[in-house]
Amino acid sequence: MRVSMKKRVLTVIAAAMLLGGTASTEVMAEDAKISGFVDVSIHEEQYGDSSFGLDQVEIDIEKKIDDRLSVRADINYLTAMKSYSSYVVDEDIQSFDDLVEQGYITCNVKGLDLTFGKFNAPIGFELLDPVYMYQYSHALVFDYGLPTNLTGAMGSYAFNDMADISLYVVNGWDNNYDNNNSRTVGGRLGLAPLKGLNIGLSTISGKEGTGDDKLTVSDIDLTFTAVDKLTIGAEYNSGRDEGAAAAGGDAEWSGFMVMANYAATDDLSLTLRYDSFDDEDGTRFDSGVIEKRTAYTVAALYSLGEGAGFLLEYRTDKSDEKVFDGGLEDSQASYAAEFTYSF
Image 1: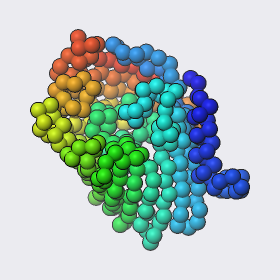
Image 2 (image 1 turned 90 degrees about the vertical axis):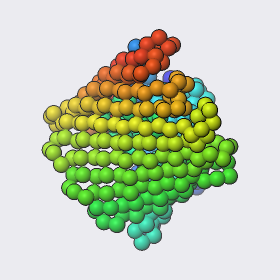
Image 3 (image 1 turned 90 degrees about the horizontal axis):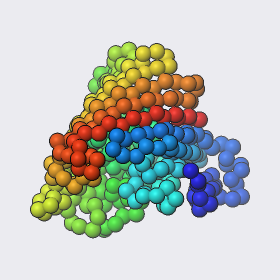
């Protein structure tokens, strides 16, 4: 896949801005931490696309300015299939917002981290980047019930090893620039009541678009690692989009996810995931109809060496309506093989 000159220029400009401009870039780069990953795959849907793909390339640059200030930027190229932006329809017309996944400054004031800029939304169980996932695909809750990136201000504070909190004021769901005169607010409370048990309680609410109605989501995530070699994750999500239903009423949805990952050997882990999403008013799925979907996912991840991993996934999506293959089928299988390398 070809990366245009415009993309290369934007990437160089962003990196130069992060590292301190033109005159001091080489000096400051010596103290910067540079990491990233490459993500390639072959993905096939029973009634959809089948393709080899360079899904994502990301370079993360972190710079600690002093004991209180730090700055970070995640510069990435990703295909439309992997995109977290609804505006991406072609890999050659991605915007600056698509190229910069994160870009923020953090200031620590007596244990309180104040973050300003664009950052991954602190909500939900699954993470955005493939190198932090147990399988190739995200759950339905992640795709249809949550934001991925937020732009604004956030304060985070860890009380002790058992509790932490984050509160934020942002432009809206995946909006680098606000499209109204109102702000979206939210937060997450993290609890660790027992060793090996972590619970997250999250909410986000605000006006989206030019209307006056609010979009509100509540989310609970859980991680259990007290059993050796076993990781269990769970999440429940519910939301309401005021005035978004076809008849003008509130559109509501709910969904959940449960998964288990077992480290069979030092190099091989196996994952089972079951998730469900009930689009009660037909506003979240692309089908445009009221439906409930469930998905079953099986994945195997094998370590090929330091930073390198190979993953195989089989997934089946099933709906209570015929929404696949042009409205002819109520289920669809998909397969994926993925190679990632992080550095």
